[in-house]
Image 1 (cartoon, rainbow, N blue to C red):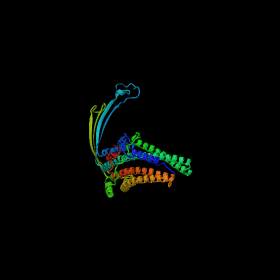
Image 2 (spheres, one colour):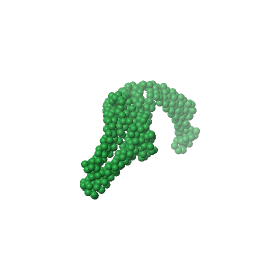
Image 3 (tube, one colour):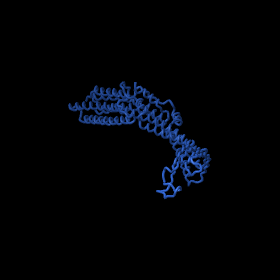
Image 4 (cartoon, one colour):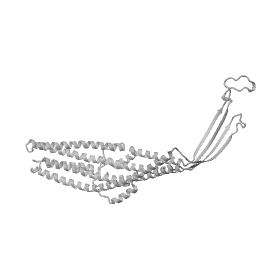
Length: 457
C-alpha cells in the first residue's frame, strides 16, 4: 500500500499557512479590538441602558436634598362678585333692587408668597444621606457595566477568532481527508487495499465535512453576537500575533485577593448599598422623632365691595409661624416600616458577604486558570511538533506496508486537532487574564489598548 506523502504534506502545510492568517497579525485592513470597543461604547444598548439607569438614580440625590431646603410658593387670585334679583324687579322707586347683571358687581384680587423651612427633621436628613450612598452605589454599578462591556466585547471578538481558526483547520482537514479518500479509491480499484480502507476514508471525510458545517454555523452565530453589540457587521478581524507573550502572573494570588477586597466593583457597590440601607433604617426610626419647621407668609388683598367701610383699599398681612409636630400613634405604620428597614439592612449585609466570597473565588479560579493556560499553551505547541512527527512516521509506515490508511487518517486528525487546541489555548489565556483583572477590579480600557497592540501592525 502506498499513500502519497507529498500530497498529505502539502495539505498540512496549507493548513499551517491558513492558520497563520488567523493566528498571526494580518497586513490587510481589518477591524481590531480597540475599534470595535469604541463602537460598542457608543452603540451597545446595554451600556446605554446602564447610563440611563445611573442618570435616573442620580436624580434621587436632588430629591433627597429637597426635603432639607426651603419650599417657596407664590399664589395669586382674582374674583368678581355680582348680585341682583332674578328677572324684572317690581316697581319700588329709588330703593327698588336692581336686576342681576355682571356690570353691577365688584372685583376682589390679591396675591401671596409663603416660605417653609425645616429646622429639625432627622427623617429627611437620614434619607438624604441614604440618597448620597445610593448615588455612590449607582456610580459604581455604572463603572461595573463598563467593565462588563470590555469583557463582552473581548469575549465576542475572540470567539470569532476562535471560530475562524477552527473553521480554517476544519476546511484544511476536509480537503486532506478528500485527498486520502480519492487515493484510497484508486488503490482499491487496482486491488492494493481492501474495501474497508475505502469505508474508513469515506467515514473520515464525512466527519470532516460535518465538523466544517457545524463550525461555519458557529462562526456565523458569533459574528451575529458581535454585531449585536456594535450595531455593525465585522467580517474581517485583526488576528492575534503569534508573538503575543504567554506568561504567568508575577503577583502572588494573595495579593490579587487583597486588591479585590479594595477594588472589586461588586464589593464596592455592595458596601455603598449597605451604607444606604443603614441610613434608611435610621430614617425609619427618626419618623418617631419630633419635627420643627418654620413658615413665613405675606398676603396682599384688595376688595371693590361698595358696602365695605374701606372700599378699594388694599390690605396686607404677614405671618411667621414655628411648628412643632410630635408623632404619637400611626396605627403601627412607623413600627412596621422600621422593622422592614432593619430586615433590608440585614439582607444587604449578607449581600456584601456574598460579594466578598464570590470575588475571592473568582480571583482564585482565574489565577489558577491563567497559570494552567501558560503550561497548556507550551504543551499544545509541543503537541503540534509531536503530531507532525507522528504523521510523517505513519506515512512512511504506510509506504512500506507496516501501517494502513486508518493509521494515516487518525494521525492526520490528531495533527489538525492539536493545531486547533493550540489556537484555543492561546485565546483561553487572553480571556482568563481579563477575567482575573475583572475579578480583582483592575480591568480598564487601557487593557484593551494594550491587548490591541498584539492584534494589528
